[in-house]
Image (cartoon, rainbow, N blue to C red):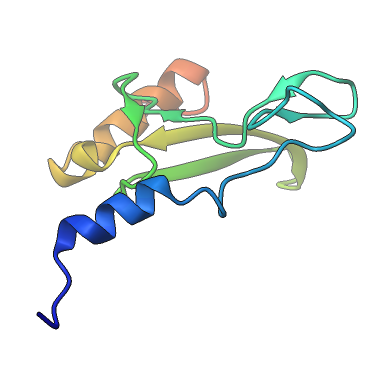
Length: 115
């Protein structure tokens, strides 16, 4: 029969070891672990949390946004300081991102509601 069964492809993919990561000669036992120059183990991916709900934002969520709000001095020049806010896609989809961002900015003291 000219078509190969799909399970044959799956078993070959899981049993083939040629593309697996091999340990380095200078770092034995550190397979799959990332270290910085100080020797501390660091990961490649750190998940973000929604600033409004404290839920984890998955890596594949394309509706999420991250905003950096910069601080300015009296002359209106950027001081180099900023606050980072992350909003999940479901907050944006429900249309509550503007009110959540207003609440977060008010909690940080960056927005006042006085007239």
